[in-house]
Image 1 (cartoon, one colour):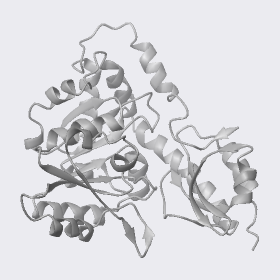
Image 2: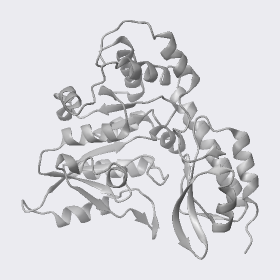
Image 3: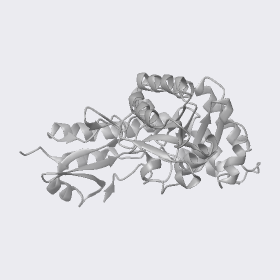
Image 4: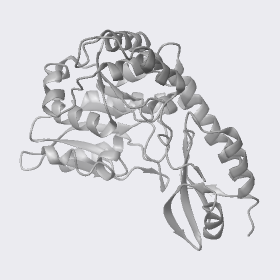
Length: 344
């Protein structure tokens, strides 16, 4: 059985494993103060086009937990789409720190988009007007979103401008950021310019593990390593993260891996469209959500693993197909061939 369940089903890109093997017997400083972490940070900064603090952390939930709890005062809250990872799949990690998440629907034209708009945020601000409620302080977006959509440059600029005018922080979850960037044409420099902080996901884009948190706003930088340590995120063998991001940014490997994942998803999406089936969301990233007959889904599940995402009624369901840096084109071709034409 071949799996399209997620983009971390495989371990790591061979170049990363080789880099880890090549540096295995080196002696270096611990806790992210090693030469490889420093080199990785410098490589990332070249793409940013501006100075920033770079912190390498193990996973997305850990990164969100440490960053958001560090950036906010006790009475301050987060605005996020109701589909956001911090709302649905992080076991209440953020709210366990005492910060309320104000979840709002994210849709356009009646269809789910997963993307926040200024008008969505304004509705929350209009309801929170005094000290008897939590104070909205930070807007959390995901790029790409949990349902595969990506932000255009114009959308990010509008959000950044809106947040700046209302003294709100803008933070981007970038678990699948590389996929979003190669799909949209937005750059890391744009992300640095338009957000206060964001992270670059490695775990879901060819790394063994790891995320690179980028903090651009000076007021958020102070004592951040203390927050990492207090929340259990300061890895003693920090070079394990440094070596991986050094390799991912050595010659643009991060982006070439994302391009492959996106291309494999596009190939499946095109075959599904040609067969006459539709999609739950508009997704140019490596996650797609086709709506298929339940009978066909049952047939496909004999040879391919994927998630049934949402029941649509009338004998149809939306499934989630996720491709990765390692997805084999022959597996994509076989899956596409098994979909077949749509029959009324």
